Image (cartoon, rainbow, N blue to C red; front, side, top):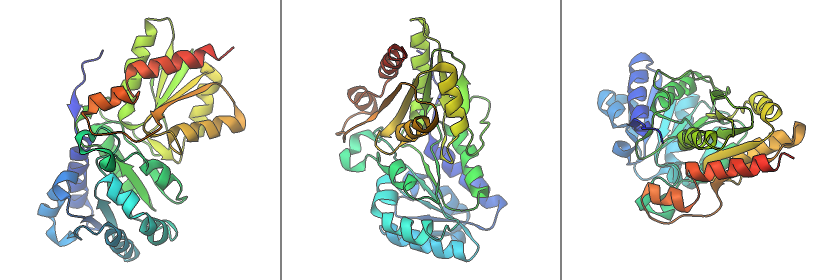
Length: 314
């Protein structure tokens, strides 16, 4: 297995936001009593007049952000995934998505690697919920360097944006910066027998799975889909035509997330065998590694899914 350098995506977000604040006075930041955990505290200290802590009132935070966006500001809202998306969904839908206001929602503590905080704190429905809001751009960066690039990209992009980041430090895939373009998937590894399409924290495990498959004579392409909307359908179709089998990997429920998007794309134009590695139920409290193993989100599980997909090629 690879010896990964680890870095925190939420810390990368906080530092990138601070730099954006220095460059653009239109940037304002809203928090909901979790500013240290979301790393927006750095912006708050540097620009107290442009930072608004609404307390434990996530719905209010989204409505205030909508008002600020209407006045020409570029508001970034941050809290935990389960609070920012699940608790404030009505405001996301009516106050931000329907008028297509220029609000950026960046939520931390995504997925089950939030770990010991348990089921109620695991943000595993967020992508599906926000993807149900047609005007939102939806981003899931895979590491800290890509998070920095993604923050800058969504700040420039007009309209509502959602991005998820993680609580623990995760492997760094991009060691020389991130060639990030909204809506353009990134091929991280070539391959001819199958393609693993991954997002977020599952991207490094997809790369490790491809290494495992090398030893079994299976050449596996790895693609990082950091933008779920707009989805790079051309890249997905190209992978299907060239490798003939697809496996998706996401730290999210398979219902309505990356796997569903890829399957919908292929069903319309280029049906091939598809296997989905993701969650099908809620998890319990545990260490991140324990939970990833128990719920089938490891390189070994991805490699097994690739074997099943290749066997179905016929």
